[in-house]
Length: 338
Image (tube, rainbow, N blue to C red):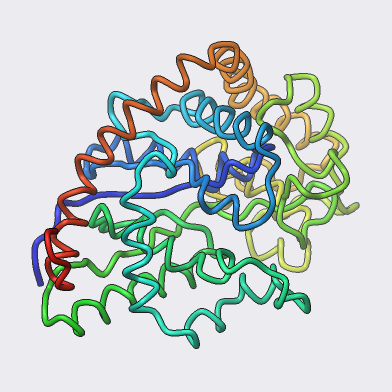
């Protein structure tokens, strides 16, 4: 197996409405991996993925800038990580076409996200939505990324990325693309709704009280946590006591992730407490961690030219990594003049 530079790639769709789930499930880990110094870190606003379903152009522009502001406000440092939007680096789409010709139709049809998003109306879904996983594979492999922090809902797509890399290497008798490893960890990798602990926190939920938005101010954050759905029982002293208590488990996990500790440690401190005592403690912690992010995002959004400059510079850095990998891919495939 060839030696590959330890490199992280991950991306978020700029579809608007960043939530606590985005922060705890992705952005916070992006910052940790950046600051650990073990990897080169490449983070992307995947706007090509966003348009696999209809996007209002003006809204997409704003959402891309807001996402960039969110990355930076959360601690992603453009001087330490490469930060850019996908459409500025053409190599993503170019490698995706190669992978469209490597991947098999049956592989794509098995993707649960395709089934969920296309549903019974699959004949009217875009070809881009069907081919989405091949573009995701290209996003990762055009940088020879060795690790990808992902949520459970994207794990299948990363397994497909590994399948595409293996098939390409086997088809052409090379050891060129790495078998990228998923990084799935953290107490609140999957943050659930504040109104229904069985459902993922989502910006598409009709109730704004179901989620904490990264643009919420301190008072709104505190109010949403205090009004979060719970059950009448006290918190248990051990994690096993959270079984069949999804709302309680969700709030404990959120506390653990924000405090950078474990659910066991949270329950060691708060076991036996009623939610009337635990919720204010969680609200104070959330405001302490999240209100500065909201404030910094607002400041950055007043400087769209600066955001565009940061994204343009990041795209130049990304192309410097991606271009030689794409060129070598073309040579392996047999493209003349590559």
